[in-house]
Image (cartoon, rainbow, N blue to C red; front, side, top):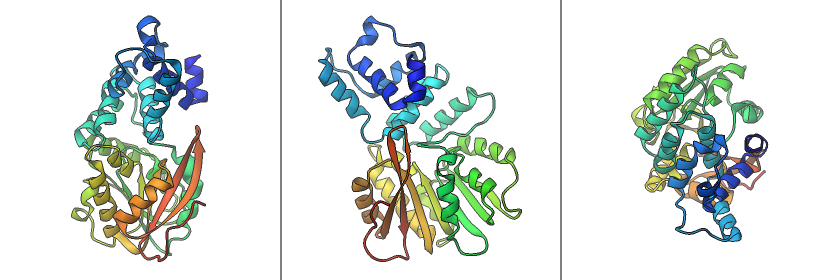
Length: 313
């Protein structure tokens, strides 16, 4: 039953698992087989009280764990439930240290060890969930080659999907600071179908997203994609300062008429003020997907635009 619920309603499954741990049910009754691997992850990442709580209080506590970065948390839990028994250790690494390269190195190394062949790992949603939005967004790019940067790409299918599907001539730069992630992505590129345009190119870069100007010249890109990179920094103890640096660096390597496109599940009431302060530019917000009860947004930063930030569309 738990396995079925995980497929039908992942948030409900995560909530019940958290609630079970909060009520200390795991001491008296065994957890479902697919949940055993996540017991250490959840109990170490979300401290339990010394004594059982009443049901209402336990439910409130479990629900509070799912607030905020729900997409990030759900992605980690589902990965932990579907991977090898060592998964709880690398998932716990990320929950605690998502701004650290060594944690990501262990994450991608563990993912590859448990896989028969390299595969994509996507935060929040898949490329297919937003392909229509992205391909339509690219139509507004100027004629000729479109320069795109995927910052903190990991092994996401986002850029490879655009490379494969877009009829426009693209030059895509995929950047991440984790060597195992870049190694895996390069293999996926080699195995990818031909690009949608015969002159399109995709290159991988091992570099720090908070120091982009050490790799690229200022004003290099028409479009910069950030799917979860800013979120991982914002949700770490030392992250907010580095997240501001990330935004600033993205805007420096962006062309004056270009766009920085951030995907996140964070509410606009929280994200827009941060981006306005960090970037000093107009921010437009669009709802792009509702998946598993979570609303995902595209935050569009446009250096060349003027006026106040736009409302959710």
